[in-house]
Image (cartoon, rainbow, N blue to C red; front, top):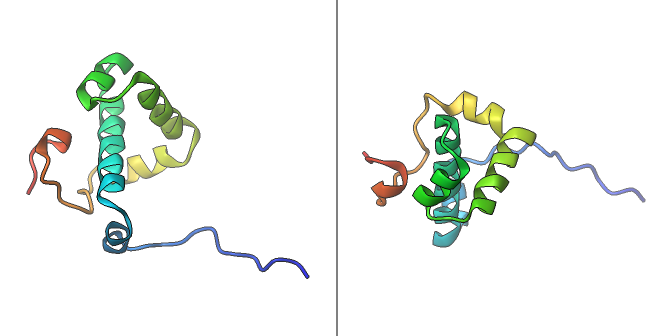
Length: 97
């Protein structure tokens, strides 16, 4: 008996995602989003790593996710949108609401 096919595209509301993730996973996502934004600004890998307080390998990995995955399309779509969550750490994302 073959496995049932599972829909790969799932729309999960952002408030549900935030409640499913642990605080460290949320921090990791915020950190990666900061890296994506700094990559979009055209900063060097070393400069991004220094500002985000991560290793250069992390910056390279996120950069590859942007270039090779569908992340670039999502970034272009959400450039004008605000983040679905507020942060109490303005040093990551700048000023918060």
